[in-house]
Length: 451
Image (cartoon, rainbow, N blue to C red; front, side, top):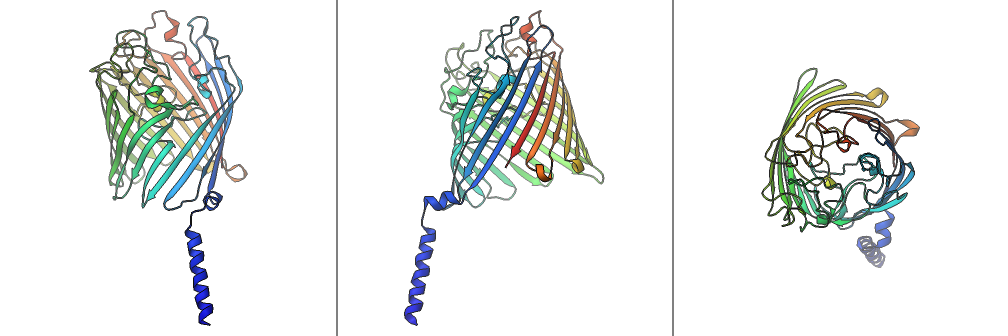
């Protein structure tokens, strides 16, 4: 009997050892697969006499996460995009000699008319410690200035070492060093320095054409930020983005809301401070990203009201005349309260922007309707010191609808978005300041399926 007990104990111990032993088969056979399919149709109707553009794209992606082992997890995935039908993006508009701005972004902006593109995504290793996480490799970041900006077929991704710290109550911290980037609407992976300039480079402060692609020297992007919840209704957020040898951008934001009997009132305040580092990326002023000694200040405010299914906000942004607020568009969109999809105020100084939004969430029908109206008073298109991309003052109206069906169609969401922009500035009889910028309408139909 003792022999049987001893044998049984030894067998159990051996089994326990086997269960704890690392096995690739065990690691990969118990993981999770996530997938997505997206169909995106876009049409841009420019001013009479200027070229219009359209694009219909379909894409799909898979991502696999292994089972955790010793608090570690491996993740990898990819995404492909196919051009169903589109304009000839290599053909310039006869009047302005420019090409598509919005529609081309559904594909690879660096290889025009490429009908099938693919990209490796989310190739990383995660280490978990209690509520905190360390990620090494390719990943999606969601921070105020570095974010997916996923309003196209592919999103912006970064590669590096990044940590999320959640060990203390009410405090969240995150940050790390990023050394490679794959911007939205591209498929290649670049060093952080060489990713700056894959999007249009605009005009230098002295009026010469931007020429910083592959001319920036930097060891990478260092991020540190997070938020502290004072209570359920008050939150302070602070972030710092240091692009080595290029610039430093600091941000602080306060949000607070008040629950009343029948509605909720909220408000927010923003402050940004930005300075060039050394020569802004290159000692040659014609090849640098930011002019030496340049700086920028941004102030923002938001007031909102929520009542039952309806929400309203009134927003204001002021970029002072100290200089242009510049942060690589390749890495994300700006987080200003006055932001409306399809346009930004990055690359500008001397800005007064006011916007209002309204949304209605009809939960019984799984519908979300939203509308936004903004007035953006910008410096003149030839004020190179404060206007990097020659953007005139404009008024913008957005109207969107999102439908998330249930039942047999669960996992699908349908989005409609229409944008109209009117010119409010001096164009000097030059249509290059109008095309794809103002006096135009952009239509979007998006179908997503996630599983």
